[in-house]
Image 1 (tube, rainbow, N blue to C red):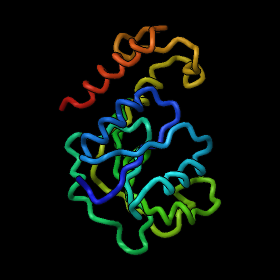
Image 2 (image 1 turned 180 degrees about the vertical axis):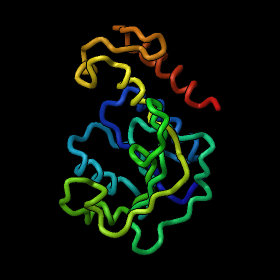
Image 3 (image 1 turned 180 degrees about the horizontal axis):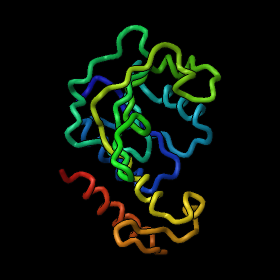
Length: 189
């Protein structure tokens, strides 16, 4: 268990429910969730209103945390630092970078966020980038396999099953079992 609250920020990510459960299991505490808020800046600001601690972990709805992530050893942010970002693996190209990674962020920094186009650039203070990898962004793999890109993934359209590389129109239960299989594969070493 850590001394930080945990929030998952989700919109319509297909694996968000399973990844929320995984966050709770790995971090050893309840993970709060903010779901379906339009506008990234607005959603980030609202996460600051959900937490009971000044510093908290923030994960996107498509972030699968590494079961070996050492959350209990995470040090608080130093004075003048607004956020720390741990890397995530992009399963499409194997690159590791901060986009989509786990964040430790100050609630006050989100409340005082400026008007820059990018949320990261709008935060007051410095941002630290950890060299450690905290997980993977599994949604990118599914997106990259879709021949028409993200516009093909709209609601009501057939979804591409990345395991069999075919389209399916299954029931919600079939979708959940596919998500569970993908999540299980992600957790294997």
